[in-house]
Length: 115
Figure 1 (cartoon, rainbow, N blue to C red):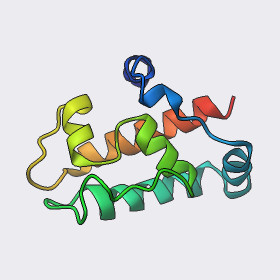
Figure 2 (tube, rainbow, N blue to C red):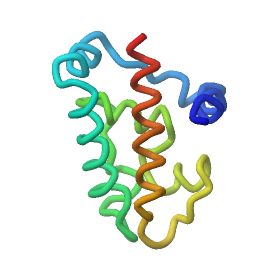
Figure 3 (tube, rainbow, N blue to C red):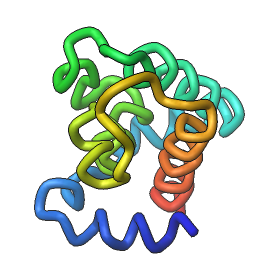
Figure 4 (cartoon, rainbow, N blue to C red):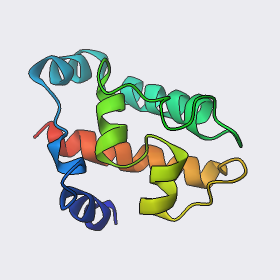
């Protein structure tokens, strides 16, 4: 399911430029996938899911954590990108199901990068 979305995203001139660095990969291996997924859940819940995210459009750094890189690569970085690529309303809070979808997509991208 996520492979089709990842394929579409990889055709974007902006999105396809994102890759995990060796340092990012080492961090994923050191922390483990479960911890990285918890980080993704936390970032999505606190920075993206609220009805009016603080600093929307600028709340996701471009580096500093593998999940941040993945959020940009998967268009899960702000509500505008999520609306454009994933067709979720930019208004109102994201549901748990929508949050789970975004987290699972982020993790699918990270796992693909780790190969």
